[in-house]
Image 1: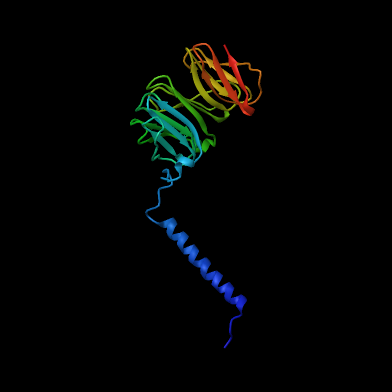
Image 2: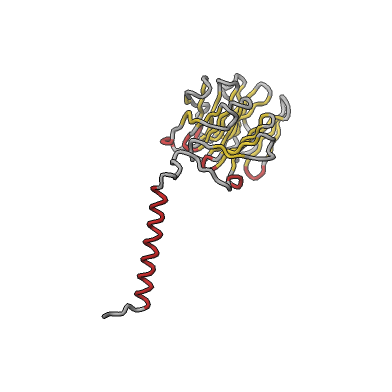
Length: 240
């Protein structure tokens, strides 16, 4: 009778261990308790995940980020709860019209809507075949809004997000990173030092010259005439 050597015995033990690990992995993959691929996953560490945008209305605060994570607070950020979302796509922008009605956008051109302050969400649009993310969302009222994103992507809705129409606001295809109001005008912070301005509620847009060629990621109103715009390498510019 042949007695196995120590090396062959180790190999046999390794194979048995590998087979056991593979069986466990297969069981986990086919387990009926696994979350569906199109839904976000509840996580105890969600507060430490990458969060990319935040919006507040009174004491309600909602933040969105990677893997479809949505966090909401009803006490101005003192405590947080995770909301389930119908996507695992990274969410990059969020906007609320009031403390109940809001929207979130992200990768795969996903657009989500909530009517209960972010407790629950429904997907109203997606276009993964376009292979470009949406980066921000903004509404003029409960029905009329815009979603903007990479490569000049510009979507508009007039029915609260039920349907979306695509159009171009420029011959360029710069990334459109952030939309924000200043007085009666709308502005878009964009790639390559571009800023777009609309004085007719988004119907037409004008490209503005700036003293910077890097990307702008955001902006804010100081009052009805003054604004700040900021971007790469800590650059901040003011216009009055």
